[in-house]
Length: 138
Image (cartoon, rainbow, N blue to C red; front, top):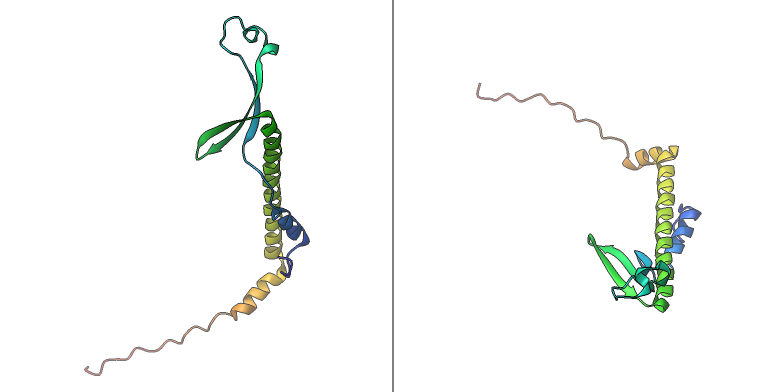
């Protein structure tokens, strides 16, 4: 893309950001504290005594919710991956916007219409009407 003439610098810069690979994921990471069902456990009466934290990754796949429990160590990694995924989506949206501004600029440019007409070469001349031939039998 660097060698393409006419590509705005902003579009080139945003495209370069999109090509840097990194681990990322869609969805969210949740932290939960839960009550157990053991009789006499303090977690039922006191919210501060609930068990946890338990971490889960959640995302929608084909219209269904998928969840996966992860450890506390994995949660720190997953948190960075989810943040990278959100950043990637923002970068894609910014790239789309820049490309649309570029496309609008091409449509709004006065020379675009004249160049297109010059490439077409104008419209062909209409054919001349010929008189119909009469049959020789009459």
